[in-house]
Length: 187
Image 1 (tube, rainbow, N blue to C red):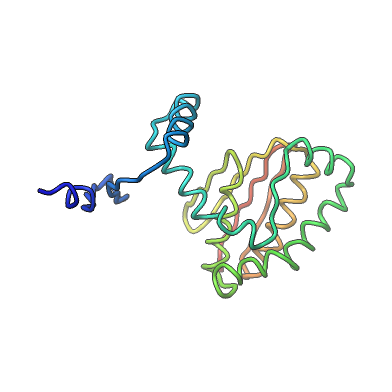
Image 2 (image 1 turned 90 degrees about the vertical axis):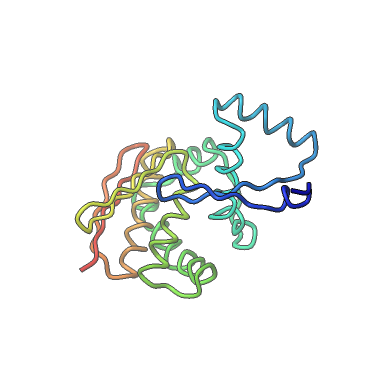
């Protein structure tokens, strides 16, 4: 087999339900060195780090700039939401969902449907360090850990409840100072 054929072929592996393929990439030595150090610091393989980073980019980060999202530190959010009353935080969550999140879903998926809203919710969770999606007997539960404060939990819960109402699902939320749990099902 020639060198070109070896480099161009994609070997597919079946890891349970997830299909993978081998691919060769050319990176600068500086980037590769930084990736190796980061993977070592995070106690993960270079492959796992690259896969995780690419998945985050492809599912959410590619849309950030186009849609006007900016990164803000947790400390900045703590300070901001520390100065907002719970009532104002809830109202803000609803307003943001009604004005901007609906437009975001339309931009990414073409329209607001049950499926596009679910897809957006899962894109949305990529931004959180810890998130889970549980599904049992037609009930979806999203758990988001944010480590900000209770007003931020109220903001998130209010926005997520407004989003779920767009697609006529029944939902309830539970909040703590650092976590939001949203459970919903479709009639």
